[in-house]
Length: 227
Image 1 (cartoon, rainbow, N blue to C red):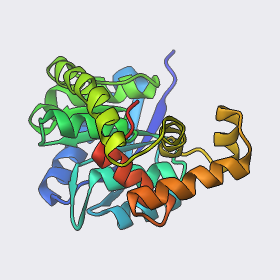
Image 2 (cartoon, rainbow, N blue to C red):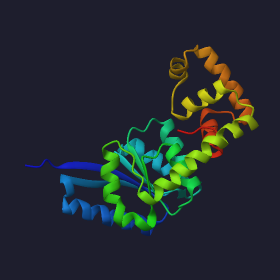
Image 3 (spheres, rainbow, N blue to C red):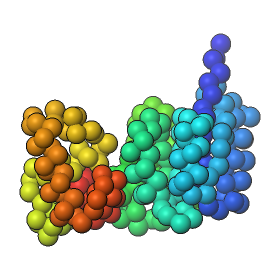
Image 4 (spheres, rainbow, N blue to C red):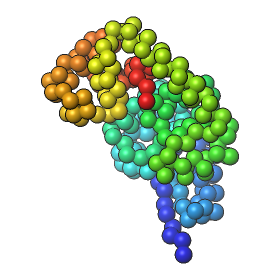
């Protein structure tokens, strides 16, 4: 006898019609009871601020996220969710098929990426894949992602040199983008917390930012770090 499971989902997209289409599709999955799974949409948001409020109040297990939002973008949302230590899975549904968008989204913490014109065919597989804590990248995305990965690995070093970041500062910046605290960074790098703070001060000065969040956004958008 199969056990009924429920998955709570937050939809973040500034296109009302697209959100409605997603709700209809998710409702169809629930009616079909595929794999004994029922999907509940616990909220809808059109911008980052709304999304963060709903994450705090509804605590969805998964988020379906667009890359272009009212007044901001999906990268900012991914960074903000990482900053608040969101424990769920984030699936990007985007009209952007460029390598750079795919790479930035995955780098910033997405669990998967689907082109919007393929949602009807791939959403169910993607949802089940990320629920298993696996990464979902359909075949037409995989080649784009790894092509960009190779290019970014090289450009990351060149950009770091442009900002005069040392190797240790790059390591600190990497752990910062992973959401690590100063104490956790010190443990990863086997240095004191005071040393981590000194590195962060230097990084902030070089990147011309004043906060951890700003540093993460700049690092991700400029490709200073890669995962």
